[in-house]
Each structure stands twice: as C-alpha cells, then as structure tokens.
Amino acid sequence: MSSYKHVLVTGIITLCIGYVPVSAIYFLPYKTLFKADKTNSENHPPVVKIITPAANSFFNWNSSMEYTIKVSDVEDGESEQLEITSNEVFLEVMYVADTSSAKNYVGKTAQSHFESPGLQLFMKADCLNCHAIKTSVQGPSFQDIARKYPKTPATIKTLADRVIDGSSGVWGISAMASHPDLTQAQAEQIIQWVLENAQDPNRNYFSGTKGSFQIRARPATEKEGVYILTATYTDRGIKGRPQSGKNGLHTIMLRSK
Ligand code: HEC
Image 1: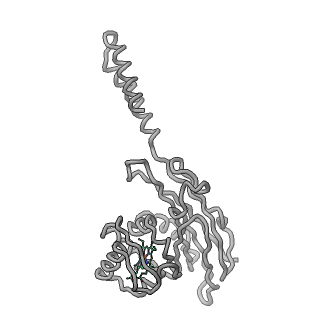
Image 2 (image 1 turned 90 degrees about the vertical axis):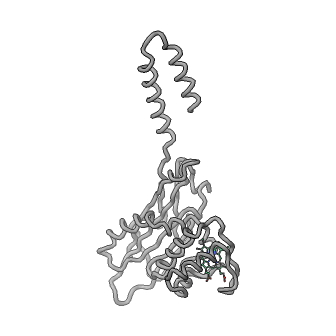
Image 3 (image 1 turned 30 degrees about the vertical axis):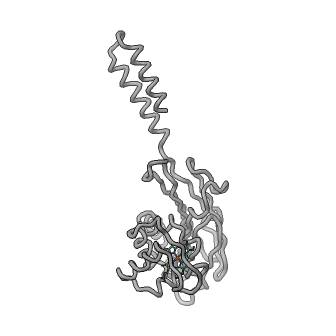
C-alpha cells in the first residue's frame, strides 16, 4: 500500500509540475490516501458469544452445566476453525446471592476483567493448562495455594520466583515447568491476583471454548441467587503493534428453576 501510494503521489506531482500549483495537488490526494490506509489497518474488535447455555435460561441446583463459547475476529479468525486457540478464551462463572444487585455486578465485573493487570497476565499465560482454580489437576488448585500462603510481599515474591524458575517437591504431585518469559513484576501480579481471588467460593474461572462447571447446592438460608457468566477474549492486535489488541466480552445471567 505505501509503495503504491508513493508511486501515485510522485506520478501526480510529476504530471502537474508546470501546470498547476504543486502543493494543492500534492496534499489533497496524499491526505485522502493516508486516511484510507489508516482505516484499512485498524484492528477490529473480536465478537465473543456464549452459545450455550442461552442467556436468561434456567439452571438446576447441584448439577453440572455445559458451556460453549464462540469467538470471531476479522484479523485472528474463528474459534470454530481453531484459528483462535481455546486457551485464549476465558470464562468467569460467578454466583451472586443478592439477585437485586446482580445487574450492577455484571457491568462492574466485566469492566474489572480488563482493568486487572494480574488477571490479564494470568489469562495470557499457560497456568490453566496444568492448574484449575478449584480442583487439583496436574498442579495443585489455586484455591489450595491461596489457602496455604498468606498474601504478604514475602510469599508473593517466593511464589513468583518458583513460577519463573519452575518448582518441584512442594506439593508432591509433579513438577512445574519454568516460565522464563515472565518478568518478576508480571509473575508477582499474577500471584497477587491468585491469592486475592482463588478462594472466593462464588467465583470460578476456566479457559477454553467449551467445558462444564458445577452449580452449587440450593442455599439453605439465603435467598436463591443467580449465576453470571462472562466470556472474554483479547485479540492479538496488529503485527508489530502489541498495544493494538482489543477486548471482546459477553455476559449472560442464568436463573434457578
Ligand atoms: C506444566 C504444568 C504447569 C504449568 C504450565 C504451571 N504450573 Fe504451577 N505448578 C505445577 C505443579 C506440578 C506444581 C507443584 C510443584 C511442586 O510441588 O513444587 C505447581 C505449583 C505452583 C505453585 C505453588 C508453588 C509452591 O511453592 O507451593 C504456584 C503458585 C503456581 N504453580 C503457579 C502457577 C502459575 C501462576 C502458572 C502460570 C504462569 C503456573 N503455575 C503454570 C504445574 C504447572
């Protein structure tokens, strides 16, 4: 595009010299071309959609709920064609006991997803390949890690070091690979987010475009609440411009039967 632009502009100048004022001809088409070029290379935001369960549908207490998410992005492609890999897509599942406040909560949480640097880094890293928030898989659950370690600057530093260097023998399951791509500051932000959020009984996080999550037992004393599902994807932006990535999200609410 830019070489084409130069050929065109140079051509116009060459043709016009001697006939009309050069500056008028030069600036008009150049400005138009420049604007067109900018529009063409603008990154389009991704479209994220929770396909199942349907928005405003009902759930059964104490059951397993399956979900599927679809992401379409002009630049990155389609999750259904595996052009967007499933571990780039996230789902937050939240139980809100106070139904009257659920609506406000929806907007707030959705926004906070993109404002928390720890969560953003966590979502980009490979942690959920081996860990889950509430259950132990290859690695210990983040809930168990958050229960074991108090949130102090010293433990945050130690755990960040272990994530960067790799770790074995602490939990006696298997070993954690090293993460040399994370800086100390990034690893600490992730750990901080984990220690602050993994123990919340009403929130869980998953990666992937499909899976299932557990609906809690019917509450005995409190009022019956709702579930809020928020799916997110941050696109890869334009090559060479890492800051140009755009966020897409979809939030739905589910009610008890
Ligand atoms: C290849 C699988 C794998 C990946 C990927 C992985 N972990 Fe681990 N993680 C483990 C295993 C296994 C353990 C238990 C290691 C041990 O017993 O020392 C562990 C332990 C931990 C611990 C506890 C360390 C301790 O000393 O108690 C933290 C914190 C942790 N992981 C965070 C993360 C974070 C954050 C990420 C993503 C940046 C991540 N892990 C990615 C497998 C993994």
